[in-house]
Image (cartoon, rainbow, N blue to C red):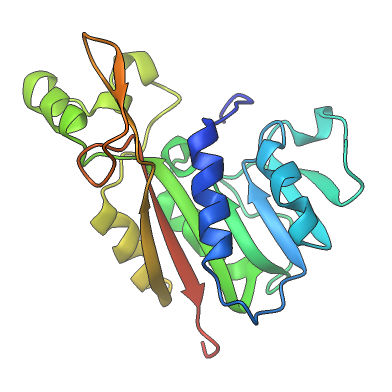
Length: 211
């Protein structure tokens, strides 16, 4: 179980970029904000969909501030209370690292998304120079050190996300980098971007029309 949290603004920008990069002619009516916390992303995408379903362990305790957003209480480590093929676009922003079984998590995303729909997942970037340096010195990735435990329990490389997507027969559309990273010790943020200078990675998948 993870406590209610708010992911950084740059992850919302990544999600909006992924939404903008989807097929222009595709008809998308229902979105799911998985582990959506206080609903910042849900509110940001509400104008693009007829309905947004926010799934979170603490969702039932939050007030709905937009009539398009329906909040659903859910333990994301278990089966989710949404029907198969009921969502056009599912987002999971900085959530999968909190989950016990990332394969179950992505299988559930795949289950609820209709054929031809999209899945977007972000997680801390293990490929950044700061994360790799931290691992070399401490044997722990930067955002998976003792201070982040037990909130962050599942560290995933880009290839891990892609392999799990392949297992679900999803097609990778694009990889996104947050485009910023805070350098330790000098506490400065350099907007260099790319694989080696990004705090988070995001992967956009598409569900095929045939199972």
